[in-house]
Image (cartoon, rainbow, N blue to C red; front, top):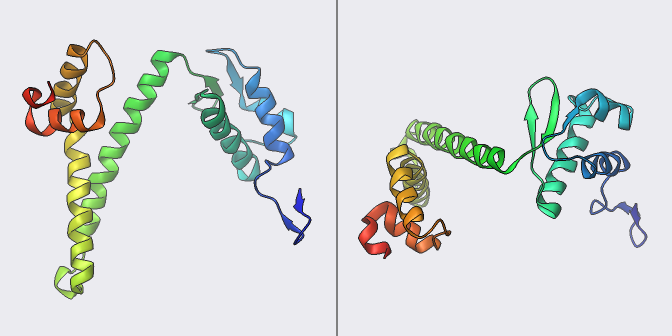
Length: 176
């Protein structure tokens, strides 16, 4: 696990605990609850706190990235391999959280004493503020409803990003 040329750890290789947890996750069936106890027992340390949590997070990320398997959290119980409809709900939750985070980010930016910023930082401030505003706006229910109608009209195919932007900002006519 060390690079022989400079004796530094090779962080490309996951830890043994992460590998063990990945093995447990590999065997999970859709909808199966993997309790925190079972996962903790597998590596001999708690997976809800400290290093064990990091190992579990890494194993979950690797499952999602490498194998397109999404494990969702069941509070105080464990994790389970999400069914397709649960993946959609998980995506919805991520969108709502992004909207809240964008709103908070704008409030934080608004608290800056704008006049004390140099010209370069004022441009950066305004760019970020505008971007966060767009993120907040496009994740609101009316915009999502409009986009959903366009997706349904396209026989539930994904819309190209440019077309989706046109629907969100210019109405459906532009997207056709």
